[in-house]
View 1 (cartoon, helix red, strand yellow):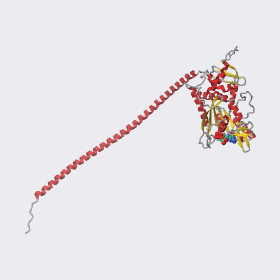
View 2 (tube, rainbow, N blue to C red; view 1 turned 90 degrees about the horizontal axis):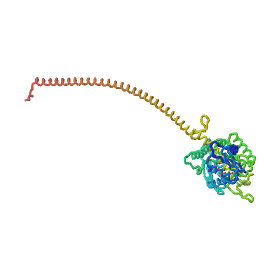
View 3 (cartoon, protein in one colour; view 1 turned 45 degrees about the horizontal axis):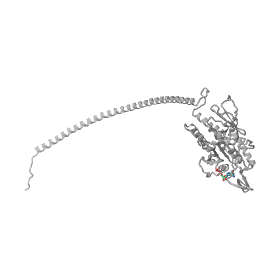
View 4 (spheres, rainbow, N blue to C red; view 1 turned 180 degrees about the vertical axis):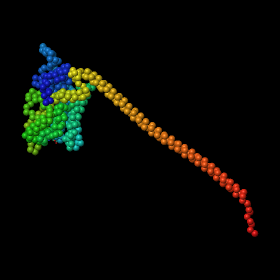
Length: 476
Ligand code: GDP
């Protein structure tokens, strides 16, 4: 489905509104459209494809009205593809593969088999509490061409009892890589030439050979990945199935994918040599093997069993060779291009729309970016003014309410205070009265006590004057 976009747009201007120059590179063996509105350097990304083709015509088109002229002699601009190839050779290219599959399904083995090298990655245990993504980068050089390969592994995928959230980190990872590129693109001083592209170009989805089709977790993850990456489902450990079982499984997987509305990456049916790749039955079923085994006089990569040998590179045994051909030899550039032109474009479009950018105004007229920006700024200013009005009004109301509440509280406190004061004053009066009574009583008491003293004194004088002092008689 994704590839159909590519095929159906051969020779067309995909973003004709914005492109100032359209370079269409025709090959006499294969046709590929490299559309770009940017610099020549952007087109250099196509070097992988171009290096395989013998280029015959390079056309520059601005509109349908442009006349085609025949040159009377060689000028030299036909060396453009060579210039691009040389330039691209120098800086190398990024290719990022995401491997999704349960722990132990054979991801690392297949990667090592595909690139014919040992990557030194430690096997993950089955004890991970959640899914995490581990990415490792390598520099591989073949005939002076450098590939900056990044392999991203889904550690712990399928290991949890509850697998509901297993796909979330994967989707987040993919979106994050798009965001990083988007951020770089928006920078004032950006350097996309030197930018390490981390966007996923190919997503190998490893399907277990033990089921009768796709498991719910497979379908859920694939559905979430649809439209975000080039999905390449593969049946892992295909040596676990006999041919008839493999065919059945392939058919049931394709039926599940169709029913689930999942669009997978369909490899272009022509290879670099122009011959049609026939008999590809998706998904490809592969066998991985790190060991070299002896089969007759040949030493081959394979897996040795007590009953015989499974040869990884034998097309009668599995689809490994097809996968390597289609993935690495013929379609790296197609995968990179689709990632940039379809998946990243979709992300960018959605992101910009979320930010409020649009290509047309309300009347359906095209807007330039600056008009759009001005529109956004005035819209934001209007929104801010409205919001501040609302805030001021709300604050005013709130203050009024608070004032009224405070007044009420003050009134309540005042009346309480008045009551208390009156009570206190009454109390004071009572106290004053009691004090006065006490004073009176004390004065009365004093008076009485003085009187009593006086009386006592007068009584004692009388006794002394009235009585006769007699000396006691002496007894004879
Ligand atoms: P990963 O955890 O998904 O990276 O799995 P590994 O690549 O570490 O492989 C786990 C085990 O599966 C190893 O013992 C491999 O030898 C074995 N294995 C890998 N590929 C195949 C295959 O195609 N067929 C069979 N039968 N075993 C395989």
